[in-house]
Length: 284
Image 1 (cartoon, rainbow, N blue to C red):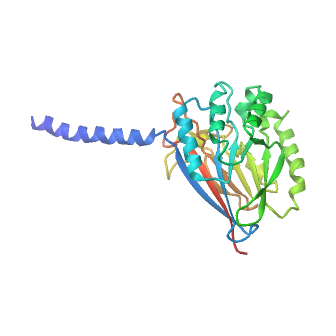
Image 2 (image 1 turned 120 degrees about the horizontal axis):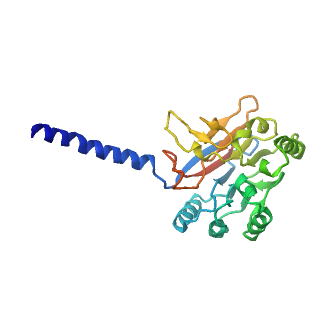
Image 3 (image 1 turned 30 degrees about the vertical axis):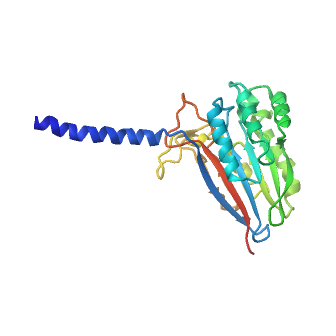
């Protein structure tokens, strides 16, 4: 009897601890991650707040879409950046349309293509839907954005390579498209879905690049493993999610872990993530 009582005193707390660990590991609610980037290319005290949404994959859950839209509203961004795979190649487009309708009045929306949108073979329809929601599509071109407190930045978008004849052709097109920016004195921001193309980005005249695609490496062990597997990077990806600095070029890279949630591909210690970026002017 004493042995039985001792066993119960051990396994009941152990089971409780296991359930807590599993609840934390498989938590699928949205997290909000904040980054601050400073630059001397903007007047001291000026600030641009940007929200980065990647890999929505036409979220079918109305509850999740509304929760994400509410988080965006709370963030009060100056711009909302849609960094690819907002639509999907196997889910109905309705989820993406409903989300865009929810957030259309919050801030100007800017978009670049993702691979799943290319794979859908419905890009003309997707572009038409985006424009109907007032979204500005950036395809190897750029716009000028005013910054609160003074100054402005250049923001460019690079189309996904799966829409190009080859990866080499895509890279060559990017170099040609953005060569005119090399002598421009503005702070320059690039939206591009693919984080694994860091070697190309280092050759382009940008101060900050924003990407998605990697889904946070699917499985994380905070402080130990920043991603188990990512598309186009394989196991133990270098750019699964987070903020990186390319030392030779000085370029900052922020990779969002995406906002999608698939029950058939569970995220472990890797909840869906909304990224909020504060770009601030710093004294020389």
